[in-house]
Length: 424
Image 1 (cartoon, rainbow, N blue to C red):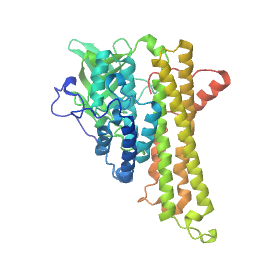
Image 2: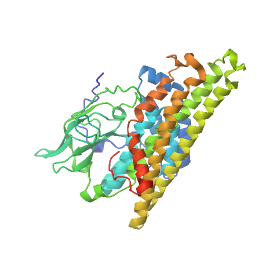
Image 3: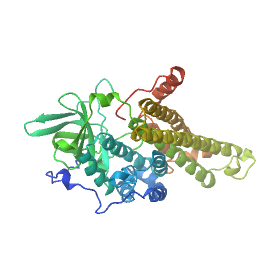
């Protein structure tokens, strides 16, 4: 299915976009409200998550709940009027949302990555402009990954300087959340071969979006194809990376991968809820089990214990990693000495890699174990329990886990730091 989302008013300029809402939805003192909102929204998301998955209903309304609550502004710096939540708090929020619907939580990851890109490389003018929009509910999606090329990171999308000004041309195969976003953050190469991020309104003339994501899981992330057909770009919509910046380690890649792992923790916890509910309402004990109820079956109890122990272990590993990312962020903005900053950044990155290993395993194992609770009837399509495994298996391919094992092992064996990357 293909859907051209470009509106009939292509003359829209960046200045026309200054947030979805007339007033700010978050401020410097919003931390407790955002955490409470995430808990409430997560529970509401869970109510119809299975129906949305079965019928492929994109979560437009559900995502608007998140935006209205101010959650998308969680990392806007206090110096710009935002709450600037810690990554530990943001991880807790993302877990709550992912437990309710991992599609909604994943849509927010490129958004939060974009917020950090603005903070790290945006000019003061860009920061003021974009952060004010974020405080009023703007959502930014990523448009980074492409098909083809020898390596995953290969890129053909170009930002060219023409007599008519800057023009963006190319095609992105992965555009998570693009159909629901206000702005797109597009990764491209400029005329010098340098990598740039281009922030353009979704309704800009020449942008064509396709609702063609057909992965077996995470079906509602709107991660379809986006075409950029000679799109006009203003100079202040471009964020450049210098050669030195590409060589310098920062906290953002580890923070992004940490947020990705919240998806797996949320899925594992959602499986637990479904498994417990199924043990009470659907599962029947075997005649030779010696019990009258499945919840009294020692093997069912063993299975539930297995799911929850691994889910909680994953959650603990993830929150430990988030805390170390926060330490790295504090060192980055606290003018720590170069050697101390590098060590804090490395520790955060290694902790995230460790957590990712644990979280991936917990989600995949939990999604398999639910069928040990209730036998053949648990496989009925009406239950849609398979969505948990489909979602986990699809999302865990984002960053091949074998590389995380290697990075962790090499660090502890040889004190080799993790590689420096700028994009995740």
